[in-house]
Length: 131
Image (tube, rainbow, N blue to C red; front, side):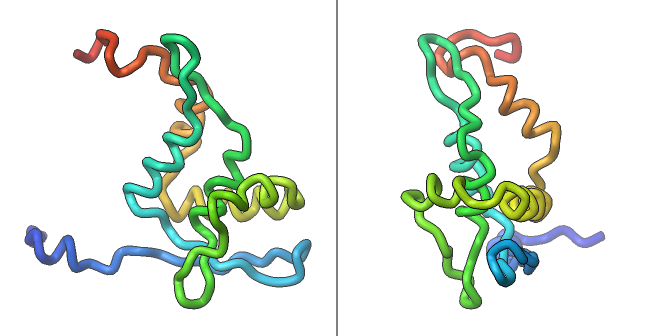
C-alpha cells in the first residue's frame, strides 16, 4: 500500500454517478455522490433547535437528498433548494428509489438515518459525555 500525498488527494476525481430509471416520470435520472460539505449541509437541514434540544426535522428528507444529488449530463444540479417542496410532492416510489441510490452513492447508512431521526439531544454549548 502506498500513501497518498496531499496533492494526489486534492486532485482525485472521486465523484461517482449512477443513472436510475424513473418510469413514473417517463425517463431516467442521473445522480451523483455528495461531497463532504454537501452531506454536512443535508444532515444539518434535518436538525432543528427546539429550546435547548436539537430534534430531527425529517420533512422532505428524501427530496432534499435527491435535490443535492440529481444532475444533468454536464454534472450540473437539476434542482435548487426552492424546488425541494415540489420535488417532495412527486411519486413516493420514484422518490424513494432515487433516495436509496443517492444514500448508497454518498455513504449514508441506515445507522446514520437512525441517528438523525433520534435527534442529537444536547446543543453544542452544553457539556457532553465525550467532552
